[in-house]
Length: 153
Image 1: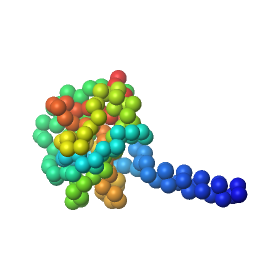
Image 2: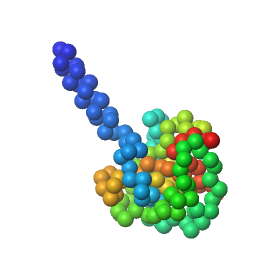
Image 3: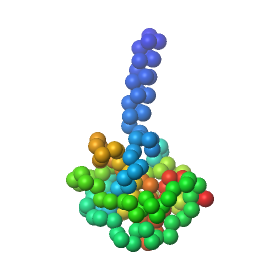
């Protein structure tokens, strides 16, 4: 009985671990820019998620000129935003992973809604392989860039 329970618990933990991606899973050397329309939202922990139908746009030229609030993590926002490019892969929809809800609240990010247009800069997997998933570094909208790696400084 103990062995069966332990096996089932182990399988659950492994499955749960694969469903959540930590920062180390993503290639932080190649920031990706995505914009589009939100198709679905999960506003819950461990982090907020949306499915975004992308329009394959290039980042706006003014992206590096936005005023970016200070955060507790040391992130070179100008370098990251300046290096951001549209992905080479052709997926129409992407799973977008945001920060935990407590951090989104700290930045005063209102819950994202289905049908809303958003833009993000973040990271996907090495060589853009695997799922069309992006971990958000910056949320862009309403004339501002919100950093999401850490809390406000």
